[in-house]
Image (cartoon, rainbow, N blue to C red):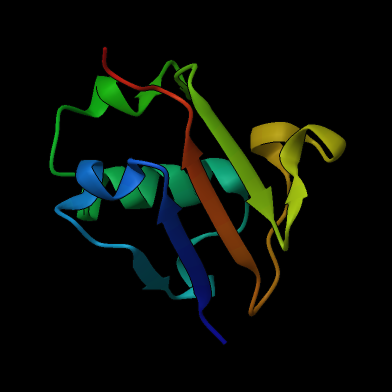
Length: 94
C-alpha cells in the first residue's frame, strides 16, 4: 500500500497546489527519506523552504496517522505500508 501524504495549512502551495500525494512505501522507509523524496519529486519551491540539513525547517507540524511526530522519533520515525502523513504549515503572512 502506498503512503498517503496530506498537505494542509498552506503546505499545498509548496507542492504546486497538490493537497494529497501518494508515495510508494518501497522508496521511503522513514520520515526523512519521505521528505527527501517529496522535495526531489514534487516540491515547487526552493528545497531550503522545506528542508535544511536533513530536518524540516521550523513552521511545520507533522502527523503520522494523526499523531504528532514529536511523540515518535522525529525524522527517524519508521513508516509502514498505508501510513497517512500530514504536513501542516504554521507559517502565515501578515
